[in-house]
Length: 251
Image 1 (cartoon, rainbow, N blue to C red):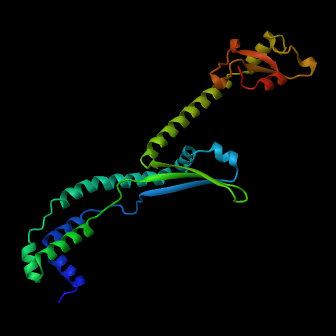
Image 2 (cartoon, rainbow, N blue to C red):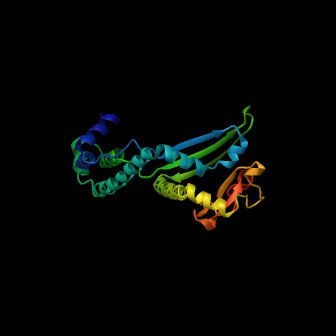
Image 3 (tube, rainbow, N blue to C red):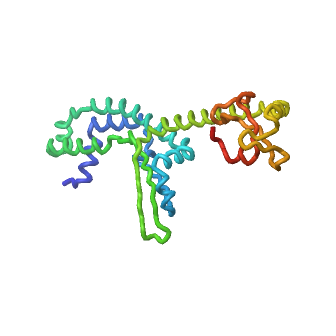
């Protein structure tokens, strides 16, 4: 009398359908190192910092540090999905056509043969990860550990690509803006500076003081370069150091 393990082994060796499934399996190579869930956490002991920092901030930091690794994971998931569609189109067509003869050969009931064959079919079917997510958790733990608070958000892992492109474009715009501002400031020549000081009578255009009053004079952009101001005479004026530093980047 065959025990359960022996019966399963004999059905696996006898079944034409399982043999075909084994052959199909040998032709597909899925990425089984991919996880369904990835978690990242940021912990604060300062409540104000915790309040100002949200899950999107953590996601951006994760992208900055780990984008290449996650890009590989995304590629593997897409490859899994493409392969799996073809894989299931082949495995779904498999049918048990010799259960009656197989049961007779092994001397077991047909229902037992088909039951084992069906269970082994699903045991042998490959199930790769086809989608994944990243959970960003921001946590506050008080210095003494008596209070805890957290906020979390789950993102589809594919979102990382779009967010990375948004960050890259934002950084490119900032870099371009900074370069333009740097080039604009470079237009402030010694000759132009002297012309503006002379035009304004070597006096601060806000308080009226000059070098004889013990202040240092600056040539200031009325509309700051950081806000699109140009280095041209009509956008320049003389200010003393105190008035200039006091106004900051205000227009």
